[in-house]
Length: 156
Image (cartoon, one colour):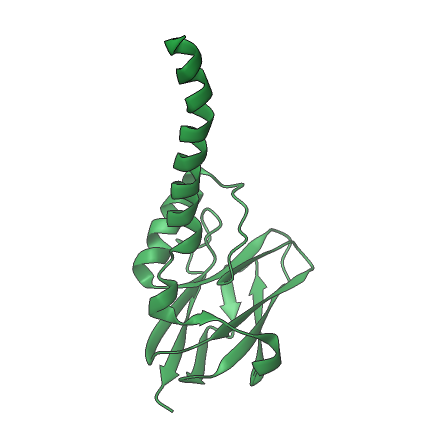
């Protein structure tokens, strides 16, 4: 009877563990430190960021004002998958290490978008604090090659 109870408990334990892991991976990324998901009806402007196979973001230094809600249109002009991930430098580096071990990891967070070659995706983000917000492509090799950028958030 004890072994049957253990077998019944294992799926619940595994589910709880995966939820905690997903929370740390999905819910984290320093979102509070960099702002919060934006609301489409409150977008103040659209910024297009072109991602290319030269491992660069074209529009890699972006100026915004505190409180502004930006629609980032991430356009992949390359022939390989790219992504745009907003975060703190520490969170981006930590996430990049995970991506190198799990290159096919898919994302469904508000602060990131993965874009297939020739396609576009978007992030709507409200910048609630002044300072700098980093962004990067965390596909294996891309960050190391210099595919990163910066959003400078100035006071209102």
